[in-house]
Amino acid sequence: GEGGGRGAAMEGGGNSKGTGLGGLFGAGGLGYSHADLAGVPLTGMSPLSPYLNLDPKYLVQDTDEFILPTGANKTRGRFELAFFTIGGCCMTGAAFGALNGLRLGLKETQNMAWSKPRNVQILNMVTRQGALWANTLGSLALLYSAFGVVIEKTRGAEDDLNTIAAGTLTGMLYKSTGGVRGIARGGIAGLTLTGLYALYNNWEHMKGSLARQSL
Image (cartoon, rainbow, N blue to C red; front, side, top):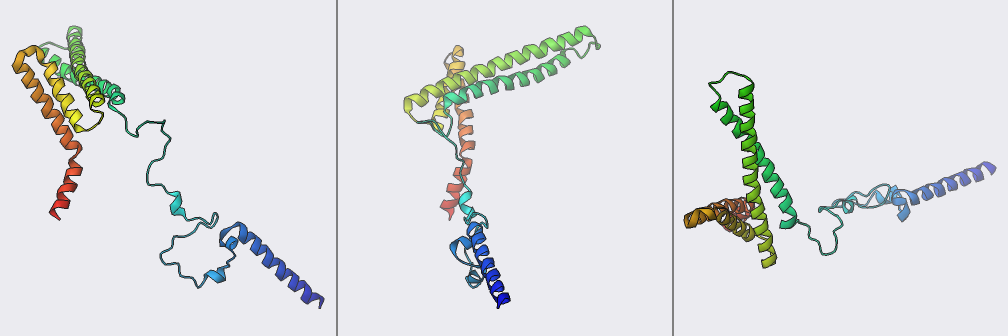
């Protein structure tokens, strides 16, 4: 009698303890045991976390989440990109000019023996060409960015039309000292370059549109 009562008490204590732990971890908090869930089909259901009783798919976000100031856009405007554009063009021009100056310096001093005067002449050519190209590309980037910001603020919209218009006006103004022909050539050059950039920027979208039309 005493042994049977003690066994029943231990069995009851074990059940209550298991229920309590189940309430803290896993599906036991819902009042179901593993035996109750054994006959339930799980086809098409996402596995639940054994610790939080939560579907993990709700914890995965497909889009970036960040806090933006009131009225701010997720993409940077032309004014914000202007500094990056101008700086990038200056550094690109300096690098290209330095390489071009090295090529010209070696070509002009090929009949000279390796000496200090030759090294100085090559270094001067590298410095001169680097500064020239950095100034040229930086000036073009400055004009392009200024036209882009003005056109964006005037139209109240940002699209590829602003890019093409800014590039065309930049070429026209940069070559304005060459007369009407210079303006025309500069405008055509700016239009061509920015048009190719807009085409490259929208190439994937155009391919998708053509694919849908073919279907």
